[in-house]
Image (cartoon, rainbow, N blue to C red):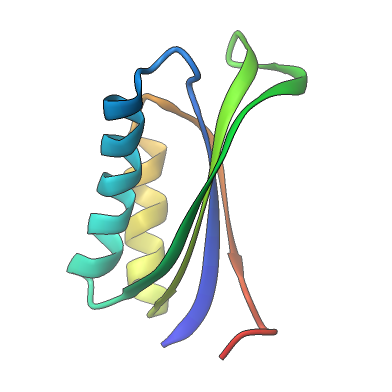
Length: 97
C-alpha cells in the first residue's frame, strides 16, 4: 500500500455532525477497500481566493491514509458524487512510507 492524502473542501454551512459524517464517509471508503486511515486534521473554515460552486468560504479537512490504487479510484468516484464536497484533491505522498 502507498501513502496518500486527500484534502476535502466541504460546504461550510453544514453543522459539525454533517461535516463529520462526510469525513467518516471518505474514511469508510478507504477502510472498506482494505486501506488504513493514519490521521485526519480539521483545518476549519477559511475564505476562498475565488468563488467555488457559489461558495466564498470553505471548511477544510485533510486525511492521511495508506491504500491501494484501486481504493483511491473508488474514493475519487465516491467524492465526485458526494454533494457537500465542493472540491477535493488526492495526492500520493512519496515522502512517507
